[in-house]
Amino acid sequence: MEDLIAWLKREGGLRIIEEPLDVELEIPHIAYLEVKKPDSRPLLFTRPVWRARGIEYTMPVLMNLYANRDLTRKILGKAPDEVAEGIEDLMKLKPPKTFREKLAMLPKLFSLKNVFPKRLEFRGECQEIVIPKEEVDLDRLPILKTWPEDGGRFITMGQVYTRSLDGTMQNLGMYRLQQYDKKRLGMHWQIHKDASHFFDQYRDAGEKMPVTVCLGGDPLYIWCGQAPMPHGMFELLLYGFIRGRNAQLVRSLSNEIYIPRDADIVIEGFVDPEAMEIEGPFGDHTGYYTLPEPFPVLEVETITMKKDPIFPATVVGKPPLEDKYMGWATERIFLPLLKPMAPELLDYKMPENGVFHNLIIAKMQVRYKGHAQQFMHAFWGVGQMSFVKHAIFVDESAPDLEEYEALSRHILQRLDSSKILITEGIVDQLDHASPETLVGGKLGIDTTGPVVSDRIEERLGDRVLLEKMRSLAPEVLALRQYFTDTPNPVTVIAIEKKRSAKETIDALTPLSRYLAVLVVVDAADNDLDNPYMLLWRVVNNIDARRDILLDPFIAVDGTNKNALDGYSRQWPGDTHCDAETLERLAEKGLVELDRERILRWGLLPFRKKRADESDT
Image (cartoon, rainbow, N blue to C red):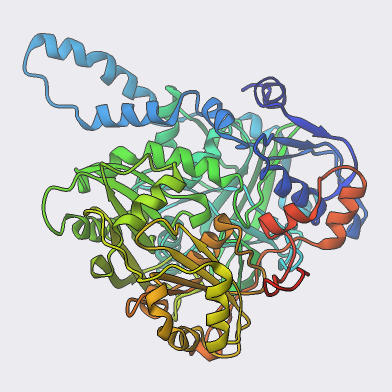
């Protein structure tokens, strides 16, 4: 990886774009559309500019580094399942009983010496250029503004290194960083993260907190930064385990934090626990904007870099995006770490259109009654799995967890409302559907049982059923049924919301003989012929305690919530691209833009009208 660009050309089909392009919207929009392609490639923008400030950058911007599964494997150096096997073998190590067993264990023990990061006594390549505090100017970095309503420019692939007050623990996290001005960055570490726990220690002690942010270097650092390591474990231990060699670290120039010697750019500074500033809004990985909130501020002390640095960045928003492939590696590698708390776990999947923490599907061996419910509580009680909102469990007879259509049919053949568990617990800080921040509803569905009998008495075609619904609830504009050959057909309706969706559902109860599972979404920005994005919308928009009804049929309110629903928080907007920017890029031949792509990925606002009307 000595020459990352040459390596990406050879191994990843790197696309180099030499057109001068703006760091505000233009570069991110190209990357956003690229990673949605089935043959997505990494992108290098060699001439970024900031037109609003008249700045032309010589530092290139690298995006879509994790562009596909094949490239993710190559960055890891092996298949994620191979890494998982190594972790599983390590967890099964037992004290040797014989001399032969001791000899057999030596290679494994010898390899473990490479796991621990090595601290060097000299400066690294990342410190070839040093910019002192009085000359620090964050405008000199090609920081991106991704979405039209973002609160400013954000660093999106920063490796944030922090350490505990007593210096015994160090952490690597990947948090977004908003640029406020030439010398200050907003630190969006969420309340459940290790960096936030360290921050509490410094605040209670009345001391400033040292922070060092790295950009670039070995791409594996980026993946390690989002890996859900247990509390107190330094993420670069995982780097050493995967690479088979120690991460080589050098000391920051202005604080005691050690960082990778080969990072491209290093931003060092201190956080004053008493100084908070509004951060956001920001179009996040949920596909919605997170709303403005106060967060800590990093006062930059110095910036160091290589002689010819590369600025890495990513785009988060509606799936599929780069985190799809990073998340795939994470779920495969961390499977062995889940098994001790759930030994009968065979496999699990966190679909990217479930925004990972919003949906998990798990395959298990069922050994006794209530076993799936036990698993649900186990998942909701451990580490980052505790943020999972919706969990579906299947047994070993189920298809492969990536065969989504066959798996959906298998689930609907066994879906029984009496085996649905609704409870509450912590939710991700970015979750917007819960009535209050940080705490919300949890949904567990046990479909490990036998095939159930039909849940409806009579099957109707879409148009006939739509007419019956409109006679009871005129706000229903469109209808689409899925899996009508199963005992639990799914009926999705789009409404023009003039009363709460619950009232609409109540109005439709006379049609219960035709309904098994009813899903309600807004007519705006939802295409009923697009199940991929419908799933994304619904699991984002529901709080199980409020939005799941089990009688007389299973009903799911996936609409945007407002005062009609008794919802008092501010509901965020979708991450939509800027139409003028897309049109300009399409005219230059830099993106492919048509109506099908706009609807498929929800690139721009749209509204599907009634089935007997034309679309707008």
